[in-house]
View 1: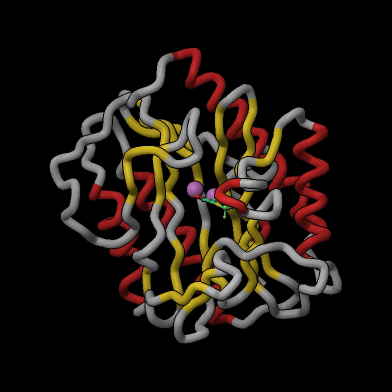
View 2: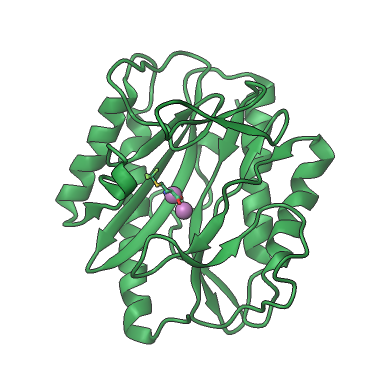
Length: 261
Ligand code: MF3
Ligand code: CO
Ligand code: CO
């Protein structure tokens, strides 16, 4: 359901706060830090901004963020025992609630010097997300998003995760539509309308797209232990295009993780 002007303004606020939380944690991602410590930095940033975590208690999820390291695809649970080391890649996924509205965004981070393979995966995943976003405007078709992502990612023979997808977001964490990140013809008749807000959040693996759920019921890993990357933006469909609601206030499109070296 498209949102009205008042709701859209609340979405802008929630989404900006979520992006700010990721900006705050960015300089703290380094070797020797636990994923729990990063979670707690995000939590403090949420409290300072007068918003709350959407993930804590969501279907029993135990933390305020998801932090997914190396072969973890998504929904990694931050833990004191998980200490970052040189060469790790990770995704931090922050969803906040402000004034009843949800803002959902995630980014990749690297620790020290990472392999070229990891860096290329991260770049391709970001480029894929941005290509998917670029298809969005009033009247565009939902399935163009996945097709655009696949066009960027497929030449590298990466696997695009199929079991987890983007989603409408607003007064609820997950609502319609379901946004697939691979080339597909589903919902081929669904066209986007001005005022819709949803996420685009491709998960891309250096190996197979297949995943495995750990016994903790949350942690999703690549089935073949290959590396996985993800970026996530919440976007708004506008008359002639798209507004990225979770663009980083500090870095814009120039995220440190995308800088070479
Ligand atoms: N933020 C995730 C998403 O992008 C959902 C996390 S749900 C949790 O949809 F329970 F794992 F936190
Ligand atoms: Co999401
Ligand atoms: Co998310």
